[in-house]
Length: 322
Picture 1 (cartoon, one colour):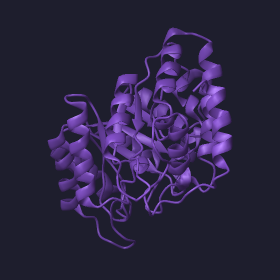
Picture 2 (spheres, one colour; picture 1 turned 45 degrees about the horizontal axis):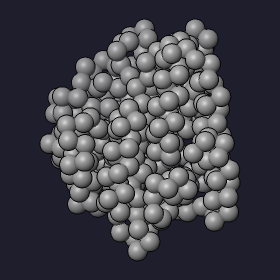
Picture 3 (tube, rainbow, N blue to C red; picture 1 turned 60 degrees about the vertical axis):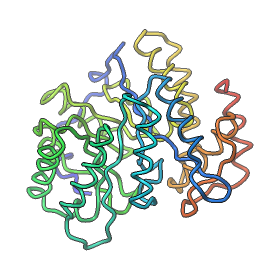
């Protein structure tokens, strides 16, 4: 990770960033459920989409939580169609993927096709990184995002730490500042799992473009919303109702926010412990415990958690009042 610009920025005082009673925009990466036979459970997916939207969160599909990198192009299109059918005119985000391999050149046309499919379905694209995109020199990388903006009119960028995906990259603050200058880039998800890097971005955002949304992807630090981040989290798929309640408590200035946030963070630490990619299985287990899924199967190529996790997740569910 090139963090030379991060080191060059003066230290940030997090206390000055706290935003009491701020309205939080919550975006929840929706788990794509599977049956025991390895097929997508479409009825359960539709039900969880509806549940998420009714809680007051914006659903996000074809994200990592929805196995976007493991789905075929046809399956991602089917997810988009099912999302639009379920939500009607409701808002949603969707991952724009280009699946490539190390050393692959940047695939402009493939990105444009992915963006177009999301736009035609009425969603807001979240541009996932790829080997080809993150391998570009900074000036060409910025030019690529500028082109995404001209093509789509509106999109969300994504900084993804390598702990989540080998093609991920956390950009320098100089590149991040260039993203702020792209009017069609309305926000960026930041998934470094580093509070300091996110605080730096928030401070820069506040100075340069206050309307730009920084969506925390830090499932180990979900209280980043206190400092001005919004969120796009996989953890929230376990409890969209409780995340929405927590967000309302913060806006109301209710101290009950802190206890509920602590209990949700306890869930986050357990679900997102290493190996991190297995969190999808833990989320499926938790949703089954809540009675929201008939089984806790995952995508056949996704890593799994041990059976013993179920007993601990039941305790956490009781702690949360589920």
